[in-house]
Image 1 (cartoon, rainbow, N blue to C red):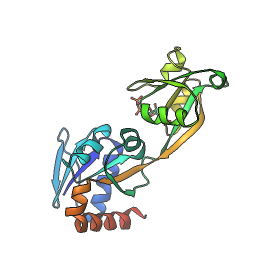
Image 2: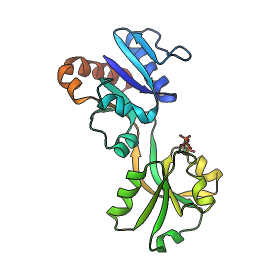
Image 3: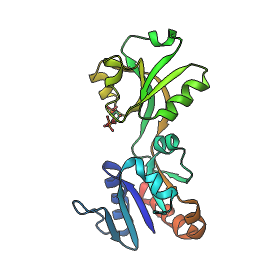
Length: 203
Ligand code: PRP
């Protein structure tokens, strides 16, 4: 079975779960992108690419943030909430300044452009969404946008830049997702792994 993991902290946390299950060391060697152990093949993938690997069946299952699968509208099965990487997707803006609420059209900067568009359109608020790739908090500080829609975890990036969380759009955490075909052909294997993960993850 092939498992796509997002690089970074969540990858480490997930490999630690496998370490607990199999009582063996699970770790990617320094620059290696593939790790084979105990009958599993782990892929070290960029966060935003995990759902693509799973959707196209280059991996059978994967671990990815709920925010990412929502934004990408990925055609995958969501099997389990790992409870890791908890964060919110929120509207943020200049502290103490709510003037965006009175505008006829709000300019929003975001990496999560679909989530941002859906959120404002559902409320009937006209919004122009400017898609950025990172350092989103900069946009309202230099007048590129009125507000941002971004991930908030501790809130320190907002605070340190004179911004504040205005509205919470959704809560997110890491999910185990599966390719739809793989789930049919390897159902037993996948479900037994999920059971083992639940046991050690205290879910
Ligand atoms: C994310 C997010 C915020 C920050 C939130 O950025 O876009 O900037 O983390 O975390 P906090 O609430 O704990 O401060 P990331 O570090 O992924 O980098 P990016 O700016 O390249 O998106």
